[in-house]
Length: 380
Ligand code: ADP
Ligand code: MG
View 1 (cartoon, rainbow, N blue to C red):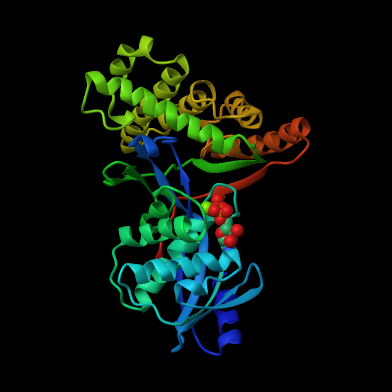
View 2: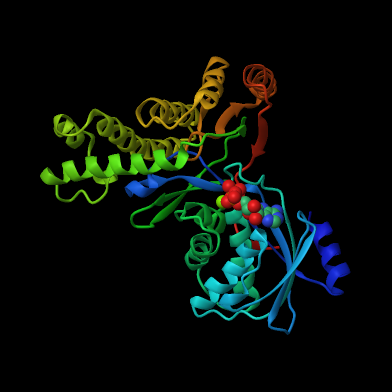
């Protein structure tokens, strides 16, 4: 990819560009915890966006997307928003940098990526983080990494119509090879934990389905969590978010809230604890416990939080049957990928079985993505 981008930059712009990159991400555990003020536990992956870039001395950005084989030129004022959606990410990053007092002038860029689009690996965060980092560096802006992550998040909010949290951009900016990052979504404190699963592979199985329920169900889940937190708060005023509650505090209000809200809250409180347990296990290098927690998360998301679906449950069950170490739905649910921790020797038979049995049952093939936990935004 690197040579291709540099070569394309030379042929389009007739000079050399500087190279930058940022990654997509996985979240090992900690799902639906973000809006409850709990932990998420993502890491950057070995798939991302790479860009060659050079200041061009004008007030225009000229961007060439290798993957869309398309050139877009735009100015840097609010009314210059380009029509192409891929270019809006770059435009948004420029605008958000300017809003934060950063300098941005015209530049030329050629970029390409290998994060599958819309598969739940956050190709958009990789794109935003790559340009947020590159622009910060070439114009000497000295914004810190957190600010760069927020530039990506605000780009999604203000220029791409996606009201996302901070996790994806955070992981894409802060990622480190061989490390996952536990992020406290309430305080934004974070801590790196070693993730070097020797003898195991991390593999995503993409069900290639997205069930429509997702956004209305999401709002209902949030409401249930707020209801449960409000009930607990009566006895325990320190509970700002549901993640602040102890499990026994939830039991105290069981009779006062609808059973559905209770089950949702039971999942969330359990999930926050599982992130902590996984971190402890990683410090001991105990990947079997990590895997078991992943199964527990899947169970919770399927039976308590009820955001799984037939395809994902099928993949999870198959993983369990084949003695895969860990497996769970990754992301909000109702489709997308499972993330699996698989022993080396089980990898081939597992993938073969997934392809054959999933395809036989659902009449379309799943996609398989191998991932390695890698560095986030950087200059190359
Ligand atoms: P994801 O879950 O992968 O983040 P999104 O829909 O949020 O999915 O973002 C995908 C969008 O990001 C694409 O439609 C495109 O506009 C942009 N994008 C991602 N990767 C690339 C790439 N390699 N080249 C150009 N644009 C990209
Ligand atoms: Mg995205």
